[in-house]
Image (cartoon, rainbow, N blue to C red):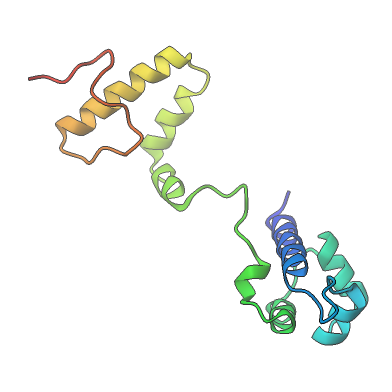
Length: 145
């Protein structure tokens, strides 16, 4: 799947969400025809955006829809579900960290717990902050007194 495909899927999700939330004066969801007439887009363009078939909507298209619905443009482009969290992406940018993660794939849960404990202990020895979800000092490598 290309980044344009992912972006069009994001816009389709965002547009469908906004359509469900922002109702027409009648209290019903806006129709494709109403959205087209109010935004200046063609019905075909709105239909393609709703279905995710439009691969790369322009910022002008996003702006026109946002203005029509009275929402920020960001609402029409929710975060990509498959994108890694920013913190994780930054950590995995380090080749050494990425190599350790890749070599850990397929190990048993017990082995992964041991590796997690070793990393926690080394971080402690180097004076680095421990993450909130790291194991306490219990495990196969107890803290030195």
